Amino acid sequence: MLRSNSSLLLLLFCLAFTVFSNSSYSQSSSDKFVVVLDAGHGGEDPGNRGNGYYEKDIALKIVLKVGKELEKYEDLKVMYTRTTDVFIPLDKRAKIANDAKADLFVSIHCNGVANSAPSGTETFVLGLHRNEDNLEIAMKENSVIKFEDDYEVKYDGFDPTSPESYIGFTIMQEEFLDQSVLLANFVQNQFQGSLNLKNRGVKQAGFLVLRETYMPSVLIETGFLTNKTEGAFLNSKKGQQKLSNAIVDGINNYKNIINIKAIEAELSEYRVSSQDVMEDFSSVSFKVQLAASSRKIEPSPQNFKELSPITRHQENDLFKYLFGDTNNYVNAQTLKDKAKAEGYTSAFIVAFDSFGKKISIKEALKTRSSD
Ligand SMILES: [Zn+2]
Image (cartoon, rainbow, N blue to C red; front, side, top):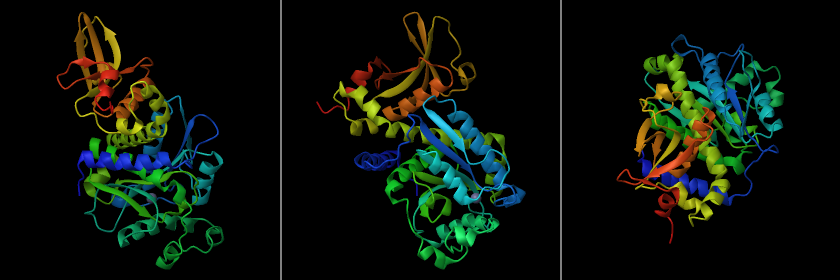
């Protein structure tokens, strides 16, 4: 089922509101926002081999692309559970994140089933499976512990392939569930917006790797290797780049929501609340100004470090070069961060009304203010 964009945003708004009212959200001791990226499988554990591909290799390539992009952001610290083709036990993956007091744990996998028809992306948070499909996928991903010598001891007799084991599955992630769902929604939303892949939605299942972490955590199934078209897409450089871009944007959206206190301070003088600002400003278009010049340059991504879309706006004798187009102020913050990460360090947000006339941010935000 496809949700309309506005109802999805409403859902995100409600979730975000829950997150703010919950004081227990995780925060690392350093002032940087720490993200631990976890490429599923590795070494003697190949993951699924749909259409002859190696899940472990594709997951790692996507993770490295996500990390390379996130490392450009000054306020982010990126850590990896593995950067090469090695086997890492599930509990060690979680320990790396716990020891780092990470703000987020993001595990990346590719799906695989016996049938070649299923396709699409899905993002999991920890929970009890609501149907057989989710149990099946959790069993498959958890079965990697059989590569670990003493898994029966380490995981308290847990047998990944026995449905009975899942009945007593303890959920230690509960306090982070709202935030995990928020991130999962942002990621799926980005997949849906920028990729032509079926959105299978946000789901819950009993993944061991998520159970062992003490911070908001998600497991992303980026698509089915067992599906011919999707497998080829996942195995392509272009596909991996597109998927990683979407994951980066999802993480940044999440980070901006969590950091909304800073945005809120900026907004207080306009008498706009953070609740207001998370919703769409239907009559306003926010863009990010990258540069102003008397030179007329083609507004194409190639001329602006592949940022897209680029538009040109003329004011008197000056051409302004703008990146992005959104009626959501939080998204605009994310776009601005992205531009800064690409080297446009003085990038800032500008706003246009529904007639294309430039208005001040104050005027724009007032369209949602309560007075
Ligand atoms: Zn996997």
